[in-house]
Length: 82
Image 1 (cartoon, helix red, strand yellow):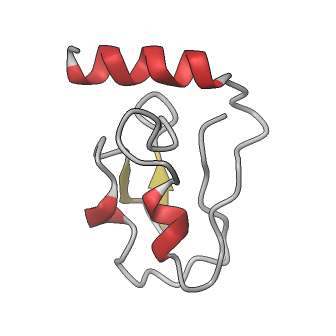
Image 2 (cartoon, rainbow, N blue to C red):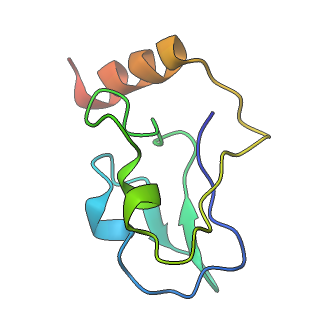
Image 3 (cartoon, helix red, strand yellow):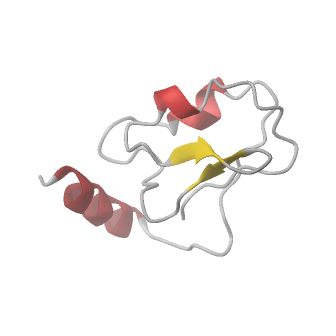
């Protein structure tokens, strides 16, 4: 699954710079995660970095974007050209 940012986001700006795939950007009101770029940090880190740094715990799995670890790794390889 890709991750998502809920409307509990306080725009603290800590998640965007830690995303290795640049999947996080400022949306109209809160930060958003682009599912086509989110690999939950598979291929980069053991844990999603945005979840690790979020001070209010507003980054759950996105139930609308279900992906296996293998699919996330394949996406990582496509994004990074590995």
